[in-house]
Image (cartoon, rainbow, N blue to C red):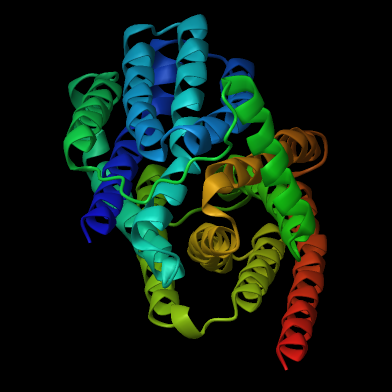
Amino acid sequence: MAAYRVFLGLQFAMATVTGLVYTTVVVYRVDVAGLNPLQLVLVGTALEAAYFVFQLPTGVLADLGSSRACVVLGVAVLGVGCVVEALLPTFAGILAAQVVGALGYALVSGALQAWVAGEVGTAGLTRVYLRGSQAGLVGTLCGTAVSGLVAGVRLNAPLLVGGAVLLTTAAALVVVMPERGRVRAGDSGGAEPGAVETVRAAWGLIRVRPAFLLVFGVVALVGGWSEAVDRLWGAHLIENFQLPGPDATTWFSALGVAATLFGLGVTQFLAARADDADTMGVLLGVVAVLLLATVVFGLVTNVYLAIGAALALAAARTAFAPVLNAWLVERTDQSVRATVLSARDMFDATGQVVGGPALGAIGTWWSLRAALVAGAVALAPAAALLLVARNRLRAASAETASEGH
């Protein structure tokens, strides 16, 4: 199970760097680079837009060539992006770093899940992805814990250290990352016909498999919701509540640790029951919790209820991606897995790009509470789509069973 261990180690390493870098990167961008609020928003927009553009080409590249190579290259590119931002503390430099980082994320995303599925097989894949999520949560805790200490030396130090860790990890992957289960997509001689054939095959699979398009619609809606929560939850707690104690930053650090621990509990619970789980039922339950918790978080006036709702949100969302990814991969031909997963990420990015600014405008012109509740409203059709998908899958299963007799 060398591939499984590599998968867990890589999830841990990347999450550690994420916790190390992003805990203090806003301080670096404001205090060192001097970015204003509009520039801070544009930095995030540049990342999402570039990520969207890179998704499909990198997915096709992984399917036509090697998922392993895409993962190794992507981890290295992410390291370069961290170093670029650390060494160029200007708006233009940070924008360039976001484009580089988006390429790295796009290379890894989809290819990593496709690679591990090819190596370990699809049996028990939900548990594998949930364990990977747990490894990432532990890494996030470790990175967050040391971020302040590293940033205390110099504000760009977390970026430099994170970049060095990722580049070292990429070098180690060249040695330890196996690829025995590779299946290439396309059989044409030229790269362009092969790429076109791969995209057509992936799209054809998405169209004909029961519930795929419905699930991709859910991904887009959840993406729009997540952008609102990610951008606004902290501001909501600060502006609309009196947090206990003298230091708000201490509260946010404690919330981050508590949310990670809750997430570990949720993923452990699901991993222990992965073989018997009704995947659509699990996803429907997760979306229902997200909807209700977001409404509570947006409307309550008691600070402790708001904190409880925020923790419920953080815990529930840790289950969504690994369970969804396992469901998709188990039903996708190995030759086009990375392309299908890239299409999933394109739907997610579309939801974020469309939903984020709209909900941000509601938060600016009306209220943060209204924006959060509006984000929760987007989850209602997501729940409805999951119900329809569940019914279609059951009908398709019953039809297959009757044909078998």
